[in-house]
Length: 136
Picture 1 (tube, one colour):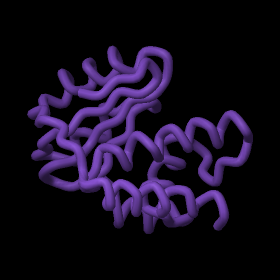
Picture 2: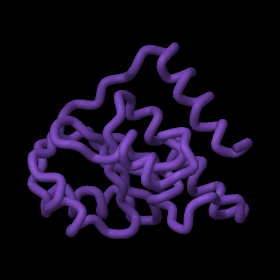
Picture 3: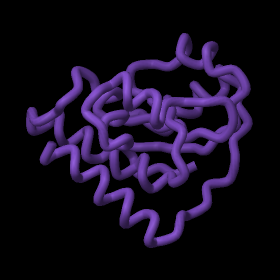
Picture 4: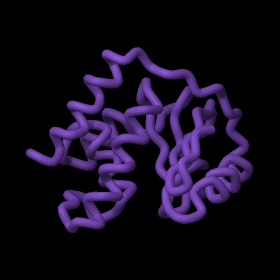
């Protein structure tokens, strides 16, 4: 698990996606991408966009989806990076991020996997894609 006080992230193995969405609180998002770094960077920018009032989505969860996918349509973003059966990343944000994430992991019963760093080139490409949402 990664934790920086306001953001906590874990890599999980998911069997039943439908059940998870019924449990997720408003400060937790689940995504199907290759790199945890991409999720953290998108979450930081989503939080900052709400602080500045430059957000494109109505919710922080939606803003994270848009930024990770590099797409401005929620429906398309869900298709591209929304949770799927198998390996996913789950991110909690806010004052009690680590505690909230731990509670959700307990409730959904997903197996937590080890976080591994992506190649620097992949992370660089991800950062560039995420930053594009601000100019779209």
